[in-house]
Length: 420
Image: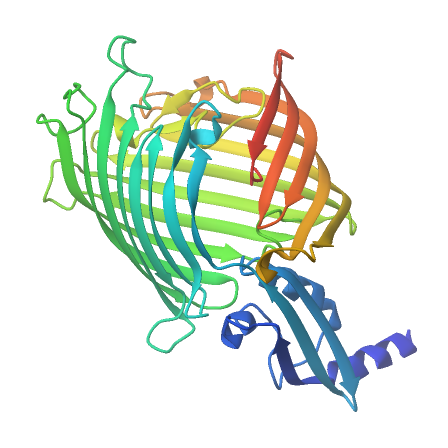
C-alpha cells in the first residue's frame, strides 16, 4: 500500500510542459486544444489521453486521431497527430425523413465543415422529393476572439406533409409551409458545458386553412419564439458513445403578445453511457417534453413514430402535446475501430477510412399524451430486440436490427445513425 501511495504522489507531480499538434494543415490548433482537459502547466494524467483522443475525433474534422506522450524529469510532452477529412462538400443531398425509407428527399448542397480552419460551419442547400426544403446555416464556435463565446444563425423554408393524425382521414392530406429563422448566442463554460439563448421567427400555415391546425383563423401563424438551453456533454465519441453523460434541457416560449400564439414547452434529454469493460457498455436514455400555456396548434404536437421511435413499433405513429421516451442498450464492440489505408485514393482526405462493428441488445418504452388525459391511464408502447451496428467512415452508422413489440410481433429495422 505504501508503494502505491508513493507512486500516486510521484505521478501527481508530473506537469504538462508542451502539447504538440501535427497533421493539422487546415485546422487551427486552438480547435483541438479546446477539447482537452490537459493544458500546459497543469497536472498530467495519462489515463485521460484515450478519452481526449475520442473527444477530438468527435469534432468530425478528422479521419484519425493519435495521441502519445513522453515524460522527462517530471515534465510531460503530449503529441497529437491528426489526419484531416475533406471539409468542402459540393455534393448531392440525399436522405430520408423521420427515419423512413419511404420518405426520401434529394437535392444539392454546399457544406464547408471547417471554414477558416476554426471549426466554423457554412451550409447552403435545397432538397426535392418528400418535404422539399431550402436551408442556410452559419455556426462559429469562437467569436470576438474568445473560445468561450459562440453564435449560430439558420434559415429554413420547408413545404412539409401534415404529420398530425388527429384529423379525419379525408382531411389529413395537406401540406404545411414553414419559414423559420433562428439566432443563437452562447457561452462555453468548459469543454463539456454550454448555455445559449436564442430568438427566432416562425411563419407556419397551410393553403387549405384546415380548422384547428393553426391558432390564427386565417390559416397562418406568425410569431416570435425565444428559448434558453443548457447542455452538458462528456461523451467520448458522439457518433457511437460508449462512455460519458449527455444532458440537454431547454424551455422555449412561443408568442410574446405580437401574435395569437401563446404557449411554452420544456424539454429534457438525459443519456448515460457506463463502460463495463473496454468492449462492453450500458447506455440509457430518458427524454421528456411537456407543453403549457394556451391551446397548442397541431403543428406543435409531439410524436413517437417519426424522428423519435420505439423499436418494435418503428412505423406506428402516436401523437400528443407531451411525450416520454426511455431506452436502454447493451453495446458490445466486436472489432474496431480500425483503419483502412486507401493508397490509391484520389484525395488524401479519403485515404484513411475508419470502420468497426458492434452488436447491441435494446429495450424501448414510450408514450404521448394530451393535457386533458390522466397520466395513470396512459398505456406506453414497448419494444425490445438486438442487432448489428456497422461503423463507417465519416461518422456514418448503419444499423441492422430485429425488434419485437409487447405482443411479440416482430420487424426488421434497416436505418442510419445511432438511436442515442
